[in-house]
Structures are given as C-alpha cells and as structure tokens.
Length: 364
Image (cartoon, rainbow, N blue to C red; front, side):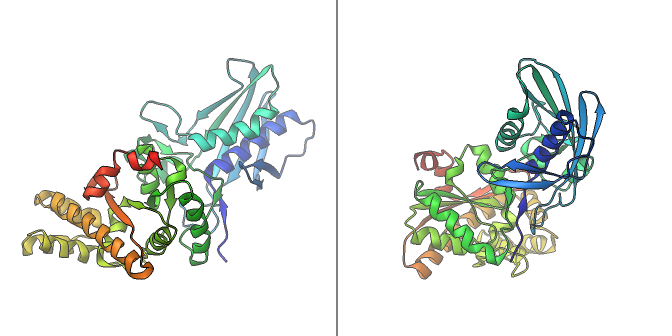
C-alpha cells in the first residue's frame, strides 16, 4: 500500500508552531512533535530542532516528507524564524526568506491554503497585544526551483507554498485509483462540467484561469479510467488540461500516461506532422528530438507547430470520446488544451477554446 505524506505548507506551519510554543514555554526541553489542524484533518508532525535565538525569537526546523510521491522536496529542511513583537496592524505576518519564491509583484509565494493553515494553527496562540512575524527559509529552495517550471508561473527565486490539502497523496500508485474515483464522485455531484488536470502544470494553469477547486479533478496518470468514470457518473463534459508531453500520448490511444507503461510521444507527434502535411525532414526533426519540448521547438522553426498541436488536441478529444463510448456506452464531450513547460497554450481544439471563457466551469 502506498504511503501518504504531507504537503510543503504543513511542515512550514509545524515548524512555526513549534518555535512559537517554545517561546511561550518555560521548559528548557524542546518539542519533538506538534499537532496541527489540517482543515479538516489533524496530523502530528516531527520537529527536527527548535531553539531560542533571542528573548523574543526562536528558530525551528522540520523536514519535508511527501510520502511515496516522487517529490523533489523529500527530506528538504524548512527553517522557520518566529519573532514576537508589540502589536501592529496584523496579528500574524508571513515573510518569504531565502529559498521561498516571490511573485512578480514581490509578494511571498504563499498561497491560500498555506495562509489558512498558518492562521488556523498560530492565531489562537497569539495574545491580543502581540504581532508574530514568521520568516520561512528553505536553504535548498532556490536550487530546487531550477528543476521546476516555477518561473513560468510567476514564482521567482525559490519554491512556493502551494496546495489545496495538507495530505500528499501518491497519485501515480495503482492502489490509489479507487480514492481518485471517490473524489470524482463528489465533484461531479456539483459540477457537470469538470476540468481534468494532468500533472502539476494542469493544476497551476487551472488555478491561474480561476477554475473553482470544486470543478478540478487531479487524475495522476489515470486519464482513461477517470474519463470513463466521469461518463458513467453522468458528467456532461471534461476539459483535459496539462503539459503536452503527457497529453499527446492520448492521441496514440495511450490512456495511462505513466512513462513506466508506455511512451511514444515523439512517434505520435511525428505521425501528426504527416497528417498536417509536413515533409520527411520535419518528421526526422521530431524523431531526432530528445524531448517533447525539443520537438515542439523544432516545429516552431518549421512553422508547423500551430497546425500540428491543434491537430493533436483535436485527435486527443476524439480518441477520449471514443474511449468512453466504447467502454462505457455513454457520451461525454471532451475538450483538450495542450500547454508547454512555460504554461502557454500551444494547441487546443474548438471545444477547449470555448471552455477558456470559463462559462462552463463557473456555471457548474
């Protein structure tokens, strides 16, 4: 059975709570664990170290543990410097230190759920005459961020505290499929038009578009199984949203996108080049590429990218609809929007173009 873990904001809040409790305690013994309200769950999180720096400040360290997910932040230390000051305009002030990203406007890349988590766990501990500042530091954050697409989504100089839940689920694990189905069941009860997010890119983009969280379904690699489930649960339509290197597999009839099972994305793109009227040299350029990104760039130089990736998006939607009809004997409208690593649309079909108005999503 795959082991669940916790998202990055949880460990930041745990260290902050440990530091604040240490300042308020007369005991010289540091805390080794803290219990958090995860909204709505609870969790007990280990604390690596905690120490008072000055009379009114303390430092605590927690290590990220995402469970069995393939997460680059595994065992990454998170340092939290908490300082208690006379009451200012706000009771709690969050600051992005080294390794925590900032948005293009200079604000800390600390998003809604993370802020709610800090407030739920720290505000009850802050007296009316105090303001507590929390400086979040990830010494390895800037280096780790270079292995992500954060800058494409407006997060600079480090990692973001992003997430919609405190639980980090191993969405690629086969034994987790049933739980994904249950999540879908809940969402389709209130939204007949769903957005399937393939990978972290899809989630970032959906949030940037303003899609309500109640309409977003994270599908991991289980695209086909959950499309079928959506059809059987009487959803009207699904928008497939994600990185092209994952989604193009569906155009070749590959409905589990795990690279451990099948990976023919370059061959699928090359076949689409032929359909779009490209010549042999264009096909060879795609097949010589090391990644789907390189293939896309090669097609941009040949002025074929728009046609090829729009054709791919249309093919993906047609294949997805046929898949649901074949295995579920039901009709489901599917639209597809393909994005590059920078989060820019590089291909979409007519259905997805209509979805981009968000009329379907917001109306439920």
